[in-house]
Length: 182
Image (cartoon, rainbow, N blue to C red; front, top):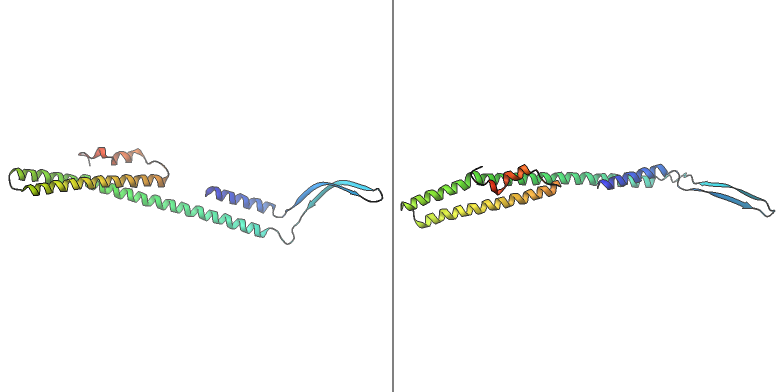
């Protein structure tokens, strides 16, 4: 799009500079008459426009130049919008991962541990213990899906931004940090 803007601007400049001189011919001129007389000399023909001064061509190229500039501006706005939307998706996915890591996973692990203690003390049935373990497994699966969504959103952001994101953000969201660190 930038190259189209440059091309349209240079075509407009060339047309504006050469619109008054449409045809220039240079050469030699030889004229012979019947009586044996001949004339030889240089010849320059220059067409001077009186009525057609190239306004239509200049106006058309100016419109094309403006159109290519508007296309470039629209493309820049669209790219910024896509990057902004992708950034918000990454931030939202990151918040979900942090919530799972900081709140839900430890809570489900604690519920399973306490349910195991109550089961060992015969205060809880086997189905309640299995339900607690099933809820913990479901939470881990949802956490992994949230990680997947984060990495998909991150790759979309990298594609929209046109390059790789800093490694610092990659290290913070990786699965290696899912231990006791929030």
